[in-house]
Amino acid sequence: MNAIYSLVFVFALVLIPLFGVGAAQQTYFFGVCVPWTAFLIFLVFFTAKIIKWASRPVPFSIPTTAGQQWSNLDFIVHDKYDNPATTGQTWIRMILEVFAFRSLFRNTSMRVAMKDGKPIVGYFSAKWLWLFALMFHYAFFTIAVRHLRLFLNPVPKVFEILETLDGLLQIGIPRLYLTDMVIVAAVMFLLLRRVAVPTVRYISQVADYFPLLLILAIAASGIYMRYYAKVDVVAIKQLILGMVTLHPVKPIPATIDISFFIHLFLVSTLIFYFPFSKLMHLGGVFLSPTRNMPNDSRFVRHVNPWNDPNIKPHSYAAYEDDFRTPMIAAGLPVDKEA
Amino acid sequence: MKLYNGGIILAGLVIFLGLVTMPVWANLGKPAYVPQKLTMPAAPNDKACIEDKEIMRNTHMQILDSWRDAVVRDGKRVYINRHGKQFAMSLQNTCMKCHNNKEEFCDKCHLEAAVTPYCWDCHIAPKGKKQ
Image (tube, rainbow over all chains, first blue to last red; front, side, top):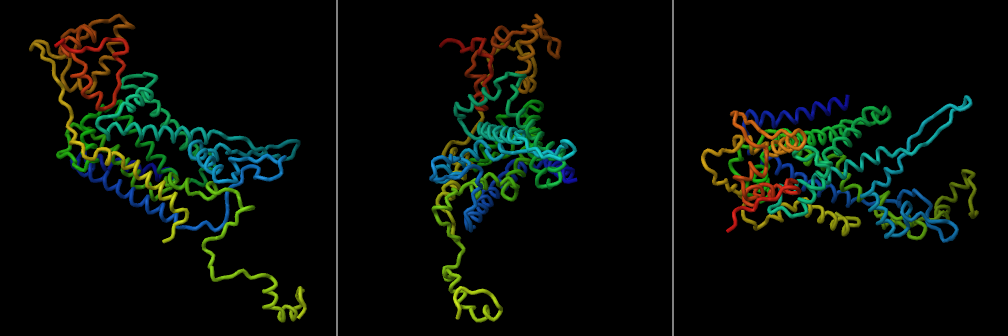
């Protein structure tokens, strides 16, 4: 049901610009006002959320210890990057996490089977999630970078190289982008995983399906614009550059196809939704205490920042001094009689 | 409000905000963008383009692609347009007869859109009449 709600919601989002531009001709509203508003909301609330997270103390030293911790016994091999002990090792763990999704790489699946009439539990390495998550994120990143050709003038040479590489297979005209295929395949996998695997479906909410379907709709509208509608790229560049230089073109060029406004509206929805959703893992991954703390609690004392400095340590001996008489009266053992 | 590890978090935040707003400051102080005007070939009046302007604008790449396939794979060399007029399917002998300067025509849009067609991997790019 959650998946259906999300799907209906994405359809509704497509209808808004479809009627807003197609019937009401509000090109300026959908072409300039909506994207700028969404972008400003993104900047403000993204910053606010990071500041909010940064102002939360971490009470305990809680790094995940996914390997052998450091020891001064030389026959114990320290797993440096899965159980880092120093800041440098923690940096490498973070870089591996951010760029290679190391924690997903450790994903396992569990199966129960019967052997000789007794159930046995087996754990298997499950790399599919890691693989498709990695494909998805890198394809998304490349696509975002590729769009900068519409935001910069003159376009630096590197974007021509990127265009050539992305269309390396020279399939069709305009050349089929590899990232277009990869992002659709990867989003489909991530979506089907939520729908088809009962255990994952059980914990999937609207907030899980909606971003996937929204991104799928964005990819689909982009693909439609490039390969089918053949939108007027130069007019779109004029609109976008007018927008980023804060001198929006007026009137909006009439040659821009409505599919562009749908694409733009869906992207605006995504960046507006971004700071309030699970998509904030973009910033959150850097602030995960379980990843960004070194496992050094054996040689560095982690003081809980929210401890009240007025509350002094209270030893057991002092405690017994406070309550000796009632303790003896209650028959409790005490270290020091009277 | 006290920030924990505020220095590094704020540094990362500033870098991120700088990157996502990059198009705004990268275009600061630059003149407003005006799409370049194509230099239309000075062709005789009887030599209209093979199809109407709108069709050419949207689908020239697909026409060229289908021409290549028709000529190279099927040996079919004659293109009949929607008005029944015949043209030789040839980039060199049909298109470049009039559009004889890549820099003044093709590049005008392609460079701005960072499009890199691979026509010139095989064909010789037209450079216009020698001055």
